[in-house]
Image 1: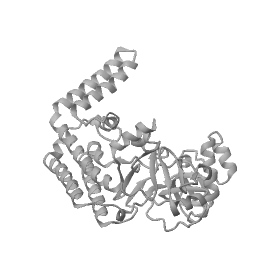
Image 2: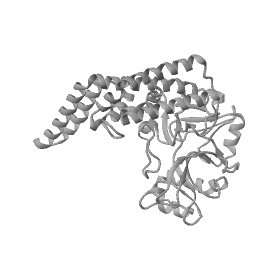
Image 3: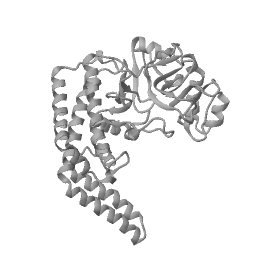
Image 4: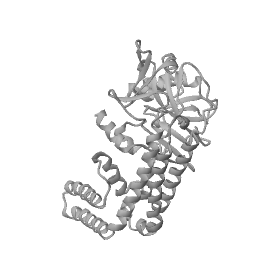
Length: 391
């Protein structure tokens, strides 16, 4: 998985794993439909937690690295490993160690991990299919504490520590992996990604330490007081949506909508600043963003183009201030409802202790699969703390 610095920009180059949105961001990006999906995903997670279920509908994000694509090639049936470049226009597919040296010799760290994956993942991989997962460690990455008997590894930002029987499994293994995605299709070019529904097809072998991404909610406490707080914020968001929905979503400027719109980049910026999203904050964000573009230009005509765009968008936000404030209030309540869920989910860390530079931390986050679309659940304040720790 990506480092925390890239956490809000999670997207694979091969366009196979799509960007995973924060649940609360969906209304800002995709309006009415975005709210409906966010609301449904949050309610689905809530019900999942109440039932104490364990399935790949709700998974924990592991901070592994690198991401590897592996399995049996649909064209020739041979086992292969690859980085995300498996889905490039000119894919780099590795059936042999010689292939890895040829394709990735310029990146020795990546090559080392792919060599380990090629040696050991065939021992557990299903006989058919293409999968993707995050490597947690290779053999030389594991630190053994003889005094406590623990085993630790740091694939990216978070250090994971296993104790007891779990530590014994880590110590015996040659490689560790969390498999989270399965690809469907007749060839690599046309394959599409879906969350791995079950690990049933995978074998077991002492050389491969496998962690399931499925989160066991029977191991968390989700008391009535937390559920009432969740419903309080969900009801508040729904009330604003039902009362002002069409009007407030239509008030969002066309340049601000969508995955790459200014609202999305503004919301991401507030994670670093810990600023509560607001209309005034959005205006300052626009002025800063356009100001940098204008400063880089040399011609008056070029400068005027962006100055006019900025003036148009700032004026638009002023004219629709109340509607935009309603949108931000929906975002606020959905985030607060999500935070209740994340707080409860973080009580169970998958049997591993998490820390960054000696400081205990929560899991990187969680992912909810609702109707085939993934939504990211994480504590954005915790993300900001982790980002500071990692610097």
